Amino acid sequence: EDKVVQSPLSLVVHEGDTVTLNCSYEVTNFRSLLWYKQEKKAPTFLFMLTSSGIEKKSGRLSSILDKKELFSILNITATQTGDSAIYLCAVPGGAGGTSYGKLTFGQGTILTVHP
Amino acid sequence: KAGVTQTPRYLIKTRGQQVTLSCSPISGHRSVSWYQQTPGQGLQFLFEYFSETQRNKGNFPGRFSGRQFSNSRSEMNVSTLELGDSALYLCASSYQPGQSSYNSPLHFGNGTRLTVT
Image 1: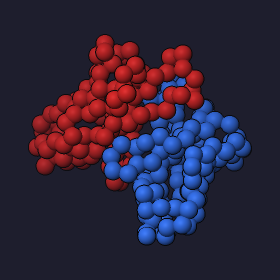
Image 2 (image 1 turned 90 degrees about the horizontal axis):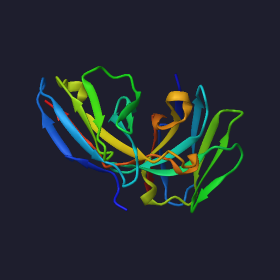
Image 3 (image 1 turned 45 degrees about the vertical axis):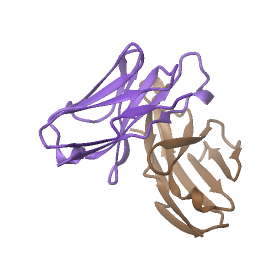
Image 4 (image 1 turned 180 degrees about the vertical axis):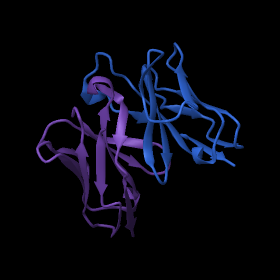
């Protein structure tokens, strides 16, 4: 059974701080790893990582995958109060490992950014 | 493009009743998945439908069922509701056939908040 573990489970920082969120995984047939941000209701897609060592960036957010050590990190620099959310890491599975409809999620990291 | 639409937004039901939740995927998306989110268990996969066929199923009892229509819209049904079924039910869609895996992440709706009393 696929497994995803995130750490820390919660994090409180002040605006301007840099944070690193961790995600480790065990999957039968690795295809990719995804990061989502959930503020109120719908998780919104951040990154999909498939290749080891290649950083994906979007503004102040960046993420990298290490397929050898089976983990990924999500970095947020110069945090803002609007970054307060639950950050979710997930891996797809399902029939033959090709289905992106079935995701196994980690528990999530609750990030709180104080002004 | 309109996002994933779920109705209703909120539901309050009594133990033993049944409930049907509805999901309209993003136009052109053919895969619809359902998830249950609770504070204790996090986000858990219920099932996935593609072209009106259930493609994957999570570890939930048979009281949880779903279906997909020819227009890709989907419904999920929970029968004989239990208190533990209180949760946020999220629907997500994606488009996979012929599309690169880089472009197939799930897009979630805002969910239906179900409270069972």
